[in-house]
Length: 182
Image (cartoon, rainbow, N blue to C red; front, side, top):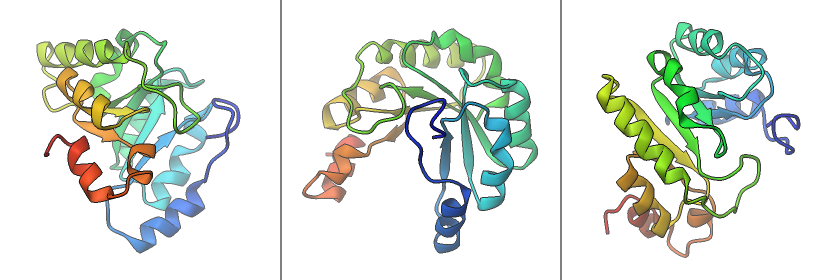
């Protein structure tokens, strides 16, 4: 977060590099920044496994996604709740994943926006009808044991949950519930 695209500012590539030096886990970097093309190289070199950029950002989205792919990193396009899902369709050939924001980006602990489930379902249908069967659909915002079932039923297969996990008495049990395993 750069304080421009969203109000808050978060950690940058040096912190990611420290995390990468401590783990070989998959690291999904969501760039909520005004011009992601300025940041892609820093995060790629720091060890990102996947970089998400916003369709609403101030850059050439196709060029940015191509830059990510050229670095051998998985790419994703993210979309805010008020943006029509159709805005991402032209970028699907360059994407491994689409991130559907289920809250307005920038602040943790917000409530899930129910209408975003329709966007997820429309994207999953479009992907299936147009040969993007391996497309991951990620959701972020307001994901808990109740909303996880809604977004999974709509077609999401990658869920980001912060508050629901970190406030849980048993994180492992909460994780299983979010995945629909219990």
